[in-house]
Amino acid sequence: MTENTSFLEDLQDDLKQIVQPYQRDLNQKIKKAEFIKQCIRYAGRDDFLKLDELLKSKIAEDIKADEVLESCNPIFESLGKYANEKVKQYRIELVKDLTQLCRDAEIEIRIDFPKFAVLKGINGEINFSNRYTTINKKVLKSIDPRRILTAILKLKRQLYDRPYDPQIFIDSLCQVYLELIENKNSGFGTSIPIQDFYLEYVLSLQAKPFFQNMDKTKFKGYSLDQFSVDIWRYFQAGIGGTSQGYELELSSGRGKTLWLIDSQGESRRITSIAFHKQQE
Image (cartoon, rainbow, N blue to C red):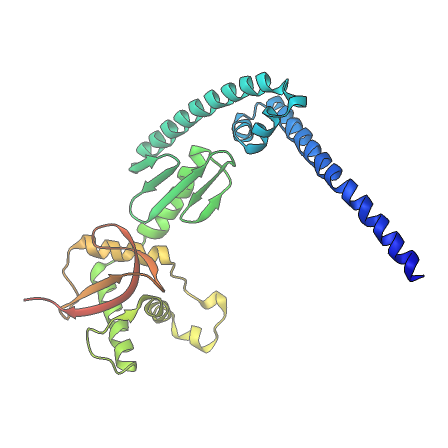
């Protein structure tokens, strides 16, 4: 029985050695055939965005180098030129339309395609071939300039169009800071890790009923985007510091950080926060 089993196992191994390279070759042929079918489908829809992406891929180069499929080369060449020209024109029109729409909405937009920025704290990127736009890490499944503008306006309302007083804001930050250093028995001017501070500040915004019943419907959200923009607006206000005469200090570095906008309007990795007596 053992001898027969060994004999059969040897024959199985021999067959595997024969079929494996054949299967690999077959898989490659199937993959190339599916790729060509995809090109046919996208050409039929005049989907030049997907065509452009496909024809710049590695598998397109593999097909061009395949002697059996060499007749695809001139067709791929023609399709590639057509798709590339259409993409260029579409991109120009998209940038032009988005710029004009923002101008009509009295919003200044800076476009360095595929990236764009509106105000401080609102940044986006257009994924052309996959037809979606990312704005502050949220995905909009469209590259339609009108829908992009709608998303921008919605975010602007959330971040900029609500009541905001820079003095009240900086005083509230300082109050949380003072409570933290008191709880830690630390001296004034001690740096507090920014992630710890952000958590405590969000908790400070909650109404008393929330702490009696921490249901999510009672929670008052305060996004990192909002925190960053509020800090930027404080710096822009130029009020100098808190009502008690303290000034804010944000320290950048590595480790546990948050991306915040500094006094120069640059987005930086902030590691800690502190307050100091203003210089006379």
